[in-house]
Amino acid sequence: MDIQVAYDLIRYVSMAIDAFGILLVIYGAILSVIRIVRTELTTEDKFKQYENTKRLFIQKIILALDFFVAAELIRLVLVSDIAEIAATAVIVLIRTILGWSLSREAHLHKD
Image (cartoon, rainbow, N blue to C red; front, side, top):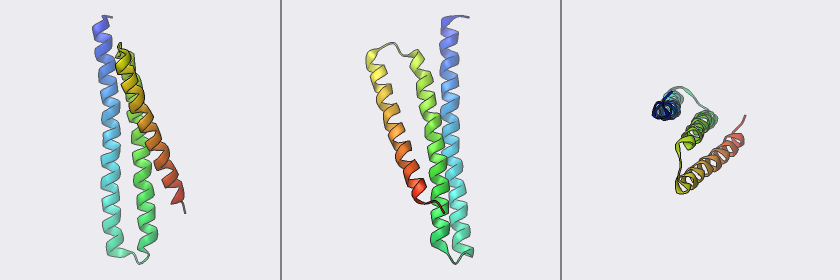
């Protein structure tokens, strides 16, 4: 297998994983909007329903962040410059901290 073909394959795989993460965020947003509209139209106990919807959306974002981190780690194989490795490390660190923070937020809203 040609090295360029391998690099292209790695790049496409990481892009597909990124795309799946984006789809998860979009799916979570659509699902949350539907739940909010339904809550507004039908529920008396709106606070509890909003908290459940918020937790659901946060869980989708956390899962998407895991996919984004995985895609970054796969792209790390293509990196040859120390500056790019450092930038990737910072991106992964930020996404990991964000995921951890959102995870704590989701646990605060458990039933």
